[in-house]
Length: 173
Image 1 (cartoon, one colour):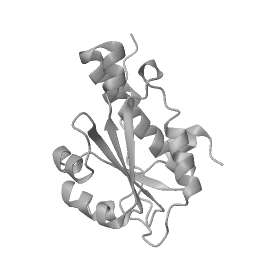
Image 2 (spheres, one colour):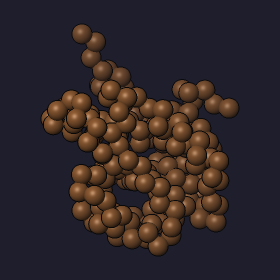
Image 3 (tube, helix red, strand yellow):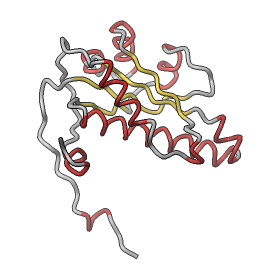
Image 4 (cartoon, helix red, strand yellow):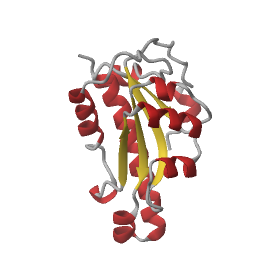
C-alpha cells in the first residue's frame, strides 16, 4: 500500500483503459466515500456527483467533450457539478457561488487520488460543452457541470510529466 505522498506522485492522466475490466462496485463506493470526505465550505458539500456507467451515455459525453473517445472507453465517468443552493443560503450569492466551485473541484481531486489508491487510473476532462452535458444528463438549471473524471483500469501508464520547480510556483513571504 502506498503512502499518501506516493499516491499523489503516482497519479497520471490516463487516456487508455482496459475496456473489458469493469470497476468493482466496492472500489467505486470506496472512491466516492473518500471523495465526499473532502473539506467543503461550512461542511455544506455544495456539489453533486453523477456516476455514468452506461456506455450509451458515455458515448454521448464524448460528443459533448471535444470527441475525447477515452470517455467512452473508461467504464466510469464521474460528472462533478456545482450545487450552490446550500452555500448561497449560508454565505450569500457571491461567496456561495465561489465556494460551490471550490467544493466541486476539491471533491473531484479527492476522487482522482482515491482512484489511484484503489489501483485505478483517471483523467480530468475540462474541455466540454456545459450546456450539452447539462441537457444530456437532464440537470436542473442551478446544477452546473465543472469536470468530467474518467475512471478505470489503465491500458497504459504514461510517463510522469515533469513539474515546475517549487521556486517557479511558490513564494515564501
